[in-house]
Length: 428
Image (cartoon, rainbow, N blue to C red):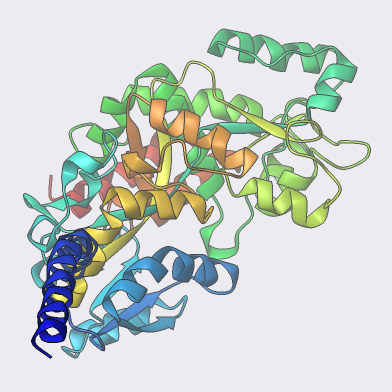
C-alpha cells in the first residue's frame, strides 16, 4: 500500500507541476482582454445614438463585435436622422452615453462632453489633420470614425479612351482637358446641385477643392477659424473659376439652370448613362454606390473610376464623429478600442468607408476603398467641409451665396453677406 501511495503522490505532484507550467501560457490571453475592457464588467450597457441604418448599422456591429464578445458589453443603439432628438435628450439631461454625429455638435455640446484622451484615445493614432476639428477650446472632444474624401472626380475610363482623353495630372492639364472637350463638342461637367433646403452643397465642395488647388489647406482652415473672411479675394477668384464652368451650357449639362435644378444624384448618373451626357462629375466617395445601384453591371476601374483633383495641395473630406457624454468604464472601452490598431483594422475590413486611424491602412478589401485610402493616407492635409464646420448657420449662408451667384446675382454682395454670417458665428 505504501508503494502505491508513493506512486500516487508522485503522479499528483507531476500533475501540479504541469498545471503550474500551463498557467502562465493562459495569462497573456486574459491580460489583453482585461485591458480592452478598461474595467467594464460583463453586462454593462452602452446607449448609443447615430444616423446609420441598414447595411451601415450591420457594418458597425461587425466592427464592434470583438469588443462586445471580449467584454460582454450590451449595446443599446438608436438610429435617427433627426438631430432634434439628440438636442432634446441633451437638454433634458438624459443624453446617450455616446453619439455618432456631426462636427458642429462638438461645439454645441462642448460643456457636456468628455475629453477623448481621458477615455483612452491617443492623437498619435490618427493621420495629420484628421482630429483637428474635434479639438474645441483646447479639449479633444470628438473621435473621427467614418470618413470620406471629396476632392475627387468620377469618370468613365471606357468613354475617356473612346474619345482619346487622358486623366490629367496637373490643374493646368485639367483646365486644358475641359477646354478640349468643349472644342470637341462634348460637355465636360455634370454639376447638378439640387438638394431641397440644402441646395448648393455640391457647389460648396467644388469651391473648397479649388481653394485647395489655388491656396492650400492653411487657407481653408483660416476660413474655418475666421482669420480669412469669406469675401477674401482668394474666395472670389475660386467662385469665378467655378462660375465659368457651372453657368455655361458648353461646360456643364444645362448651364446655370441645369446646375441649380438637377438633383445631385442624377448629376452623377449623367456621366454613366448610355450615351453619356457629360464626361466628368466632381463628387464625394459615396458616388460609387450611386453608380452601382443604378448600373449594377458596371465594373469599377473599367466602366467607372475616379481621380484626385490634380494640383490639390490637400484633401477635403467629411467625418462622422463619436462624442461621449459619459466616462464610465464601458465607454472608455469603446473609445480606446476604436482608437486602437485593432479598431482601425476592424473598421477597414468592414468596408465602412475610410477610417482616419493609421492602422486601417493596408487592410481595405474593396477596390474603390483601396484607391480612396491610398489618397487619404498620402494627403498632406485633410480639411473638413467649411460649411459643416463653421457654426451659426454659416453653411446655409454659403449655399445661398452660391445659388444667388449662379442665378446672376452680384458676387461681391453675395460673398459679403456670407462673410457677415461667418464673422458673427465665429465671434470675430
